[in-house]
Length: 129
Length: 384
Ligand SMILES: [Zn+2]
Image 1 (cartoon, rainbow over the protein chains, first blue to last red):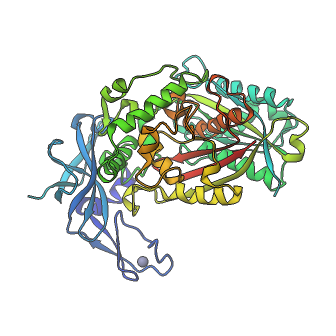
Image 2: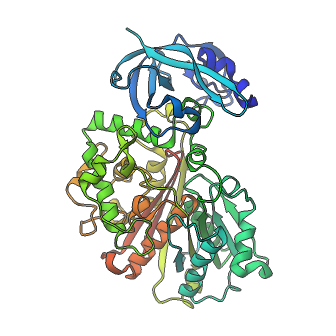
Image 3: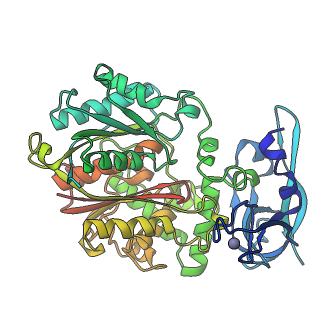
């Protein structure tokens, strides 16, 4: 498995982000340095509860090799309740998605590496009805 | 600072060039530029090369030395440097060359851009390396998918229509038909653009520029030295570069490219020009929505009103502010690291009156080259 993937497993599997105690800002993906405070950053890890709404989205038809079998799939820009924005797949019928739709995080399979047979997991979002 | 002039330009044909290798493409552009400037070659003091991904497209790094070598400059041992900021690499090569002359370090410098994408490597995957591979690419977002997310919100918030995006494509194809170097030299109808298949909704095939082979070369000289080579110098009055968050999820407002706003602000100030002084522009229409956002972020239109310019014909070849007279990335082709230099070639030809059938009347021109989804922007202002 790619080292750069497993190094980030915790953050991908359960939507763990960063919080800067100096300026009370949240970040995802996680950062070691707050872009507002820089060397005065006081970063700690924080799991996000993963409820949010769709700010914008697309339905991908021309997919990368690893995702060919899943197309068409929805990729959305989601704003969480704490203001953090996340780019994620949204598991739903492409006809169903709309801007403003309420969604929540879910643990799902992302893809497979055909050569090694490794399966990648991560956070996706699903409609929150 | 020395005033910097363009004394020669050259451009290869853009497109899928199965018969030509990387070296052939580069040399065709280079020879054209040397002839245009009336240079032998030994006058050149330094070279900067824009190339996004030779390592992955060709499995060849050390592109700068390769190009200097095959341009016949190996025996002069000039410094040659490759620069990379995704598909704004060409614009950055131009900027580095500009700074080398403006600073007085060198008198005559080459800015080249080149990409060969049809040999090895998967173009879609390589373009994904211009966005955040770990956090955007991982979830199945592609470069078109991210622009599609931006386009969807632009439509929702400002009432931009899929038809407006299609009109950009139609205009650029119309211009490309007049450009002998363009990849696509045919006009298309609005229906063709609107009926093309979705790549990432709402963006369709005809909203997306191709990924092409191609090279472009511009030769720069200080104002005094330029007088020895040309009676029709085109001056670079400013060349500004700016950056932004790499991933769109970290930007406060995905409907404004703050890198473009910042680079444009700095360039207008340095060149001492206002938006209304610009007569012609080449902008980075890797996706049609990017051209509409460029209208807004460069100040040609208010935020949210970019689509008006295309609806009203302002940016057509015969409009008040022609944009992408070359055909843009959509029809001329997007040879990734070559594009920023190719834009400078087009503005130079237009300001000199050498643009043939697509000639417009212009004294001042602007070029906008973007890397990825806007994490890098380079704005250059030209005058004759
Ligand atoms: Zn902070």
